[in-house]
Length: 363
Image: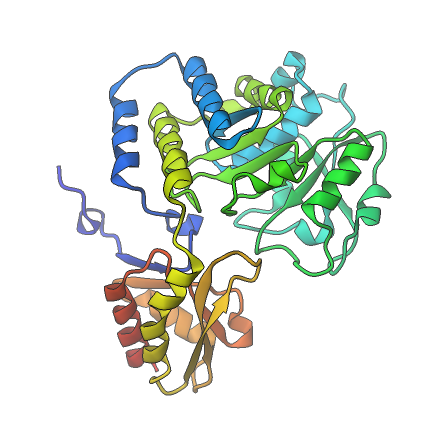
């Protein structure tokens, strides 16, 4: 059987938006595909597979324990459920029981974002209640601390380009507040590239996406304190059952982590070098002004930033880029300011040339 875009009537996509869920996130390597194939062709005791791959990953990352879940979003929901239930089997079977009242999850107001779904939806799915700390433009350690009550179950920190970046407490500062009040700190670091940093800074549970920086299959990873990971694993008997992950993706993701630690991801310097001819081509198009910019959250990621100054608006250009086949997807966060960003991590030279040609036609 041949798989193709034509078979299902699908458009080909040039993904210049980055590791985005709406486009299937990232490509996987031959090694990952082989690991997935081995998983698909064999049987396992699934509880054993989960624990053994978790222990293997924990050893690689120098943490107490790890658990593979179906996605970073599932990681948030199950981590919230874990810190609320604290290992109670009754809670796993009755996750929203009124017998357990300590359900408040403290979240900096500027971190209560929509990344495809609102953070608070995942917190609520885990049985938690979001309590915002601070303000949209500012949140300090003191702002978080003043919101702690006897109903507080955990502090949640979202490390993402989606969140407010200025005047926000650091992970270390959040960890200090959590530790002084004997509360767990959960860090959602879904798209982050450093798999060691946040545990080292004091987080008790850290959540990563499998298919973003790590370039694995659809999966999520929760790492941290052993007792908390055991509580996360227990959610498989509760809300985690609806979020279970297959054996093929467990093994594929484990291979992806091993490869990522060995090889890393493309450096910012490499991206800047590859962007040079692309930027030069864009700057020859009337109505466009292009430059290289760094990721807004400070990661070692560089993109092409294009100011649209012609008769068409940035939003109109974005819409036209998506219309034809292949559809070109870009980063649209600054479209209201007339700016389109191109993330080239998953774009090769031929595809960059196609983007330049398409923009010539549009402009």
